[in-house]
Amino acid sequence: MINEIRDAIIHYLASVMKKEDAILALRYSNTPGVLTPFIARNKEDLNSIEAGFFHLNNLAVYLSEFFQRENQLSKLNGALYIVCKPCDAKSVMQMISDQQIVADKVKLLVYACEGIADMKKIKAEIGLDKDYKTIELHHAELSLTLLDGTPLSIPKAKVLADKCLECNGEYNISLPYVFVGDEKKWKTNASNFGKIEKKVLLQDQKQGKELFEQLKSELSVCIRCNACRNVCHACFCSEKCIFDRPKMTVGFLDKEIAPSDNILYHMIRFYHVAPNCTACGECERVCPQGIPLSHLYDYFHRLMQESFDFSPGSSDSIRQAMLSYRLGEDLA
Amino acid sequence: MDRTNTVIAFVCQAEKRKKLISALQSKYSNLRVIPVICIGKLNPAIIFRLLLKDAKAVILLGCDPSDCHFREGSFFSERRFFLLKEVLKGFGFNDKLLNIIWSNPGKDTSTLKNIASFMQYLNESHMEKGA
Image (tube, rainbow over all chains, first blue to last red; front, side, top):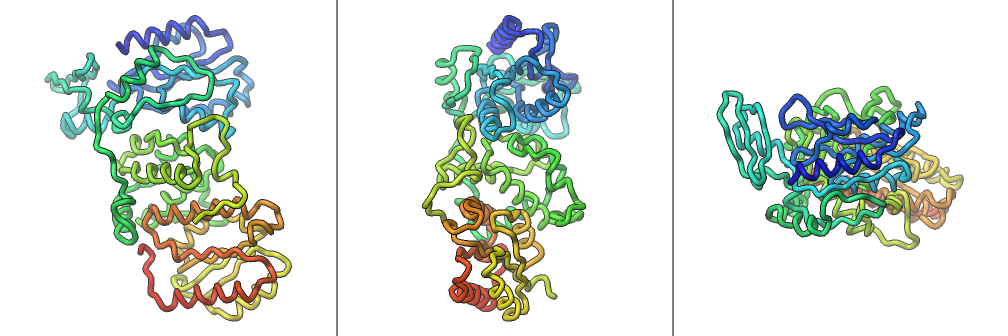
């Protein structure tokens, strides 16, 4: 099924691609189960495009950097096609409404995604001390070969990412886009990926000092590698980031890696990101320390909806909540 | 000066506030007043850092949103400080350590009263930061 969709994507791109166009997609790497982003500039590159179960990355992150570079070189005369999942389209829309990228130059190619893998779940299934040589998806079974040659198969539903289990197939893409696959069928299909118990946010269970202590202990393992910042499409001030400037007049973070500084790091980051976080879950996926950042971003995602009636990623033309105001509004 | 006992006040620097600033500085020994051009221009990351590491509490004194000299500075900062308080709450931090006062220049008596009650509150209750 997913191979058909991959072929359909390549077929469509080959028919519309012009000489000046570029395509942002994923392709196979040497590491099994890992796809790497790349930019295809001619028709021969198209054959290496991959999509499907291992399409983990949210490619919207690369857009602002790509356009900055292209504008300097004035290289891109055509359009940029971006191959993405329906949930990534939200991030692209949010970036357009934040005026990070120009809407005319981006063309969305959304495909009927069938859920993506959670590599941490796969690792937990096969055991933390083992590794795999090959990994492939056959219908509802994930078949692996371990390093010592033992074959293994895991049902797909067991290793689906949490955000796919929560997915209900409701996306309004306000940009012109092309859907590869049957869109109506996908919408009913997406709500049946699997079920997960509705997550109760940590902020609803605990409050005050208890919550502070728990977050402090969770964040104490943070090594401040900035991976969550670099992968975030909402963190777009790439060269002006305050965490990169230790010699500024105000030193925001000390050099020591103390729990109190880690909390400060995440407070500042979430304050910056909250108005345009589309809850894509990339920060949790890339965290090398496995910090469950989801209960933080879910909380702020809900907060934005409740207090400002604004959900990031719902349209490409809404002004961001922190850059607008309503007269006579009653906050607090 | 003991850092853990310091209270920092960011005050919107209107012409009529000069008296208020000098009054505050003479009245409280542990209060530091920092005048800013407009409270809407303040970087919230500074407030996070002060609350978590360098100060006991923070006071933000801005003009009433409808009377901002820069027309819409206070409207933006109203939303910004709301989010700031919510972020503190979301992390379980005691958001009562952040006192936000909206008052016009010239209404010094009510502002002084407000700050006095806040300082008294800080002295009476030995609040921990994550509470």
